[in-house]
Length: 197
Image 1 (cartoon, rainbow, N blue to C red):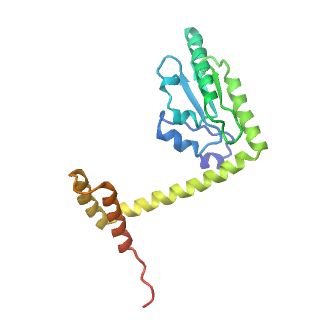
Image 2: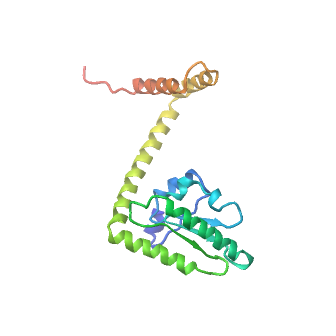
Image 3: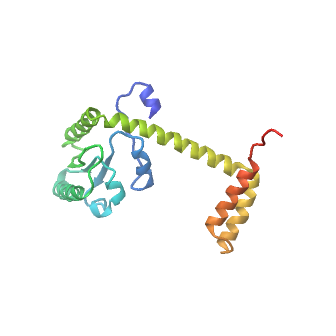
C-alpha cells in the first residue's frame, strides 16, 4: 500500500481472502472498510460474522443483475436492518448497505459516492487524520511484536526447550501458561545485560 501511494496512486484497494482474522487486520490499514456479500451464496446476514459487521463502513451485496436482482435487494435490506442494531462508529459515520452489479455497473457509482461521502465526513470532523496516526502506532507495535517473536523463536536454546515443553503440554504434565512463562523466563535470563562490575 505504501509503495502504491509513493508511486502516486490516489486510491488503493485492498482485497482479503474471506471473512476472518484478515479482515480485522486490514481494518487497521484502510480508510474505508467495505464488506462484499453475494445473495444466495451463504454470504447473507447469517453467514457474516458479527465481529466483521461491527467494523464495516458499508456492506455491498454484489451480483444484483438478471434473475438475482430481487434476492440481492432482499439481502441488502436484511443487512441494512442488522446494521441499525450495531453501535455507530466513533467516527460518526453510519454504516450503509447497498446492492450493485459489478457485471452491469448497476449502482457501482453509488458505491463510489458512498466512499467519497465517508472520506469527506471523516476529513471534516478530523477523524481520518487521527485514524491514520493510530494505524501507524498499530503498525509499529505489530512490527515490534513480529520482530521480537522472530528473535525468540530463532534462539536455538529456546527452540530445544520449546519442543520439550510442547510435548509436556500435550502430555498434560504442565499447563500451557506455565510452559510459556518458563520459556519467557529462560529467554530473559539469557539476554540480561550485564552492568558495570
